[in-house]
Length: 168
Image 1 (cartoon, rainbow, N blue to C red):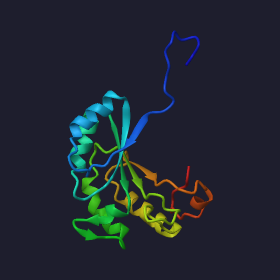
Image 2 (image 1 turned 180 degrees about the vertical axis):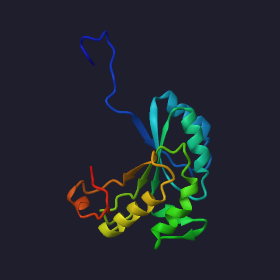
Image 3 (image 1 turned 60 degrees about the horizontal axis):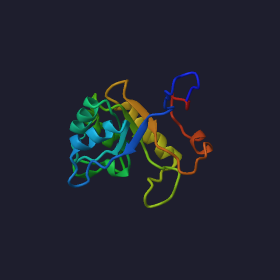
């Protein structure tokens, strides 16, 4: 709050929320209307082949809500086939479904941690996953976001081979 501004305040960040597209009984339009009304500006959700990601992204964009899809280990089940061993195959399969209304793609999730709820990857595997989805990115404007690290240790990322890319 700026003392010189008659009571106005500004947020330093946008509100975001995790959202499960596959939860039974969800009414996406209703939920997105409620989120917009409560000033949520970003929805993060896991990619699932069985979900109409394209429709959800259009509905969110109509409400000025940005979308961040997460490529976690379950996103590698494409067209009913587990492509777990081939990040490149999974990225190629997802390419046509990463619609223009999708704002960002998080690749990986908690890769530096060994737990049933994390997607543990070696640095080499994580680098390969990032490069696969970068190569198949359907447009330059689609922002790629590296999955979050549980450890909070930036040193884990220093060992990544990102080819021509550098960590910013």
